[in-house]
Amino acid sequence: MNHRDNIDRSFEGQLSQVEWDALQQAVITDPELRREYVEKRWIHALLETGSEALPSLFAGTAPAVAAKAPARPFLWLSAAAALVFFCATLFLMADRRADNHVATLIEAKDCRWAGSDLPTVEGAGLVPGTLALMEGMATIQFKSGATVTLEAPSILVVESAMKCRLVEGSVVADVPESAHGFTIDTPKMEVIDLGTRFGVTTTPLGNSNVFVFEGEVKVRQGDSPEAKHLFAGHSLVGATDPQPGQDQEVRRSEPIPSPGDDWTPVSTAIGLGRDAYVRRGDDHGPTGGHPLLMVKHTDLAANNERRALLTFDLSAFTPAQIRDARLALKMESSGLGFSSLVPDSRFAVYGIVEENATDWSEQSLLWENAGPLVDEALSETTARRLATFEIRKGSPNGLIETRSEALTDFLRLHRGELVSLIIVRETGEADKQGLVHAFASKEHPTSPAPTLWIQTAPAE
Image (tube, rainbow, N blue to C red; front, side):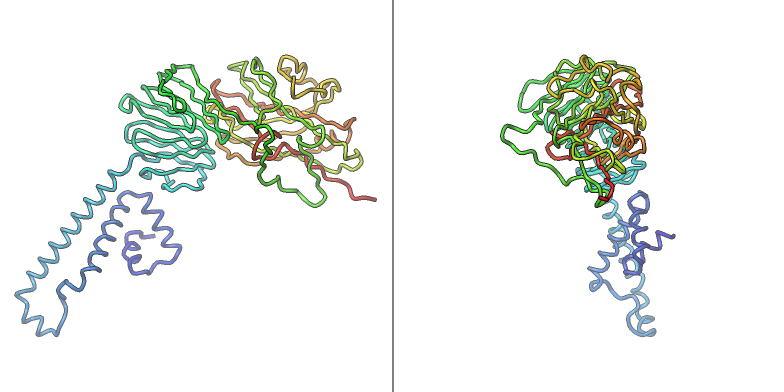
């Protein structure tokens, strides 16, 4: 497709929709073609608006034209001078537009965007504006020299060559000496670089976290004028109060879509259901009231190991009624760790078979008293491996569903009205600051609780 010819045709409205879409994409991605398009568009517009004032070079009869031949060189010279002036103006304007760029999107492979008001193709120059990355990873090179890698799902506001604002999500910044003072704002804190490599996360629940990989940063929290200095290996977490206040209803989003008419949802918020997570070495107390269920596996920092526990009340069913089952979890941002440091991750769902191990409490469950539920390798006498699912690096916070014959059989054969599951991440990480995966609990203010969908047999 000859895009240069199509530039001229576009001014006359001669392009099909397919040709016009292809031209737009080519102009955005090719700096030379973009410059040519802007130049021709500018000249075309000026010639259109000034057409009445320009002398007609071909008006009149042939003899009349011949009679005025001596004047023609002057007319051509005037037209040429005008075009030179127009081109000079155009290039000045193009240079001025280029000067407005404060950053460049240097890498955006396998990305999905939604809600951005900036160009999202590789090589695009960025003026101040918003980038909303739904899936994948993207790298932005600021004119100051700072490089920021955006991890989905994230919303980043580019403000200048020395500043950006992370509305939601995670970024990792590499800042050379030339960009000393580069700043990343979040709703809870302002992170000012002092020549370093660091990561910043923030979640819709309001908590923000900064971790310094190398060098030093200065952090201001809220309206406090005092700044804290963080050095390599140190982190700071912004305060948050994610739980609903007293007498405040929990607001939920749209429920998980039903697989069909003969499926019944049973969430951890129904009956005697419950959910929580445990963390090795956690000294902050039980997590039964936390809005997130956090899961992580690592051989690099033992105290960062996390597992989630779910209990469902199946008192409304008899084993003979259960034909099929699936587990649904809503992914959420944990605000802890970075996706770029974890490969595509596999998770396993275990069903607890030891009767004493199912009798756990949200108010008292800790890693230290979870007994065999937190053994490195769950034994068959404690739990049975029922299903698996995968979360790819840079995946959006969507709905995770898993099903298997083993899960259905486990529910059919399980004794008692309460059934408990364990969620374990089996994939490790390359760095101890790797991502902590999270799912909405029954206390989450907007997302649905973990849900078992049960397909029942028709009544006889």
